[in-house]
Length: 436
Image 1 (cartoon, rainbow, N blue to C red):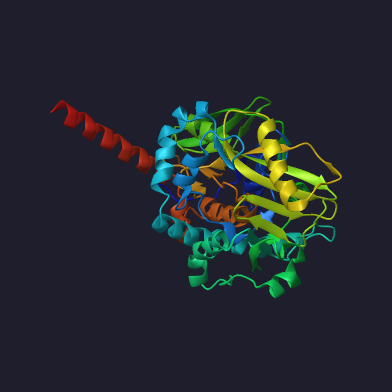
Image 2: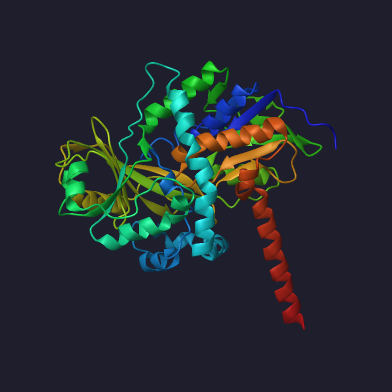
C-alpha cells in the first residue's frame, strides 16, 4: 500500500447540516471543498426540524418497547409513528434488523457511543457562532421533558442513565410543583416534568444560512441545484463526480445526501440501508400559551421550540412514499397541539422532511468499504443538528490523516457489509438444511 497523502480537493454531496459541517471541517484542514446539492442549502430535513442541540436525546431510534408501539400504531394515520401498508413489504429486512436492536443492551451502548458526538458539538457550535457579530442566536435555557403522567418521564430518566454514569449532568428526579412553577408555570397542574440544562436550540433556516456563509468564507464552493448523475472510478477510487451541469474531478468524496445517500452509495457498489423517515412540523403565531423553554412531550411525541415570533411544533415518524404532508396526519398534529397550547392566530403551511434512518439507529460516518477515497456522513436520524458538528470533525480527521478515530468505530459504514454477509450465510445455511 502506498504512503497516505492528504487530499487537496473534496466533493461533498449534500448541502444540509451534515454536508456543511463536513465541508467546514475539511476546509479548516486545508482541503479545497466543493459542495453540490440537487436542491438548495438546507432544503431537506435540515430546514424544518426543531433546531435542537440536545445530547440527552442523542440515543439510537430503536429502543426497548418500540416494536410493541409500532405494532399498536400500525396503519393508524393519526399516530406519531405511521407505516403506510404499501411500504411495509419493501421494508421487511430493514424492519427485522431494526427489531433486533430494540433491546436495553444495544440501546445503552448506542447512547454511550453517541455521547461522543452530542456533547462536543456545544463547543464547536459556540466557536462558530463567535466568528460573526451578527451570527444567529442559540437559545440556551434548556429543555423541559414532560408528560401528563409521571411514568413516561421516569422512563426518560432511566434511558439517560448511561450518560449520567459517564459524568454528564442530568436530572435524577421529577420536579415538584414549586420547582416547575419557577421554570415553566404553564406546566403546573398539567404535566410532570424534568429540566435538562444541556440543551440549546437554534432557528434551523437561519443557522443553515449561517453555516453556508461560514463555509464560503473558508473557500468552500457551494453549487445549488447541481444534481449528481454518477461517478467516475478507477483503481478503487472515485476520480470525478458527474453532475447534470458538469463533471468535477476530486481527490475525495463525501456522501452526505440524507436518504438519497442509499442510491448514491449503491452506484459506488456499497450498501447503506438508509431510508426516509418523514417528519412534520408546523409554525404557529400567537398561541394561547407560549412556553419559556423547548418542550419534549414523551406521551404525545411532540417536540416544541419557542421562537420570538412563533412556536414550532414538530413530530411524527412516517414511512411512506408521500412527497407532501398527509392532510389527515397534519390535522392529528394540530389537534394534539391545540390540546396543549390552545388556539393560535395563524399558522404557516405544514412542512414535511425526510430524515435519514438506518436500522441500528447509529450515524454512518467514515470511509465506504472497498473504496480508497469515498466516505459517508449520513444516517443522522432526528439528530442532525446535535451531532453533525462533531461528526464532521471525525470524518475530516479520517479523510486528512488516513486514520479512523477510535470513537468513530461504532459508526463505521462497513458494519452493513458485515450484516449482509451474515444474512447471506444464514440464507445459505437454510438452503443447505432444506436440501438435506
